[in-house]
Image 1: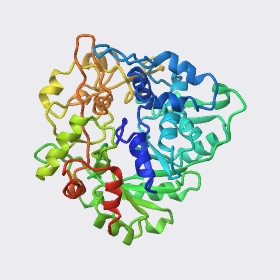
Image 2: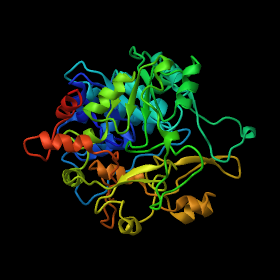
Image 3: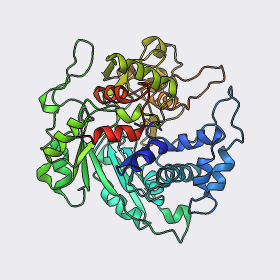
Image 4: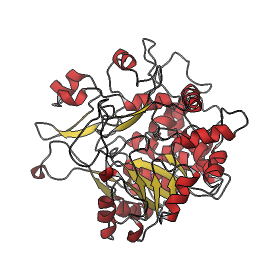
Length: 466
């Protein structure tokens, strides 16, 4: 549900029903800046920024990005600085404030719980993003795409406004190079005094019992709960266990080793939710009967009325769902992260080889860039979706890593209705990710009066029917 698909309107709608509404924390600094450049037509971003508790920050962000009436249609969005181990002050402030905005808006008008989801793989913004969400009173932090072992301590320290350090993986580095970290001191950035904070619960997104057991075994790394996400889920999936194998269409092959039974985590003594193919009343009933606290549902909410998905993409997927056939493939090459990534095959999107081939190859957002060790020992940043010459010759990457890689940063912003327009008029195409199970979507469409749309509340009512 990343990059504004599960935005604050959807999370708020779900939370109003008493369930846990979750906003995506991915690239919120870009989302916030682009919404302001579109003129913030309903004033929501500026309204939230007006409640940001640290003086001066909101005014600087509005001055930098807000365009009354919105930018001209043919004009590109103004760039946002990219993250490094030592990000610019303006970027740190923007990231904290953008995460505050999303959670603040999601929590308005009700007392239901709100969570925010992050990817451990996108690690450089994590301390600043978590702090911003906590300033807005976020109730849960969810983290997947890697082990969140450092997060319990990080959240503890941020709740006390203490300095935090997060280890960063640097490709090609050895123990002789020392540790690479991103550090954040709220007092240094914002000054004192700072408002009291409540420490949110941490829910680790796992795909195996092994990782859950390892995290639960140590009080320092133990999360407050788990989300067990199977490979039918949308977005990034964990790679299959065992040797890499592909089916005749080039998709990774999963087997019984990759399936976690709904009762497998019951003995750990922590609440857990099942995800990936459970979003039906029967799926929920089966999960709870086996010991799970509930389920996490994505696809049925990604296609509901309140989701942030661009209307044309949503309409195309709903039309396919009505026919009973939605083509979704697990692409082992699409994501620069190296994780398998679910891609819905829709005309005009990067799921089409010709659309991919026609796109100028560039990386100007850098959300998925990875840190690497340069020959001189310093740290550089590279992405396998950037120009091949730049990635291979200038930055020492392997050409094999570039094959089939999509620029998910630009594409997912386009899917959320925030595409970049290039000076030559080229508009970044979207890429749509969903889970592979559309049973719940079809059921909901059959129950709605127009047979074409449904709300987040409809989805919750449907899921709770059993």
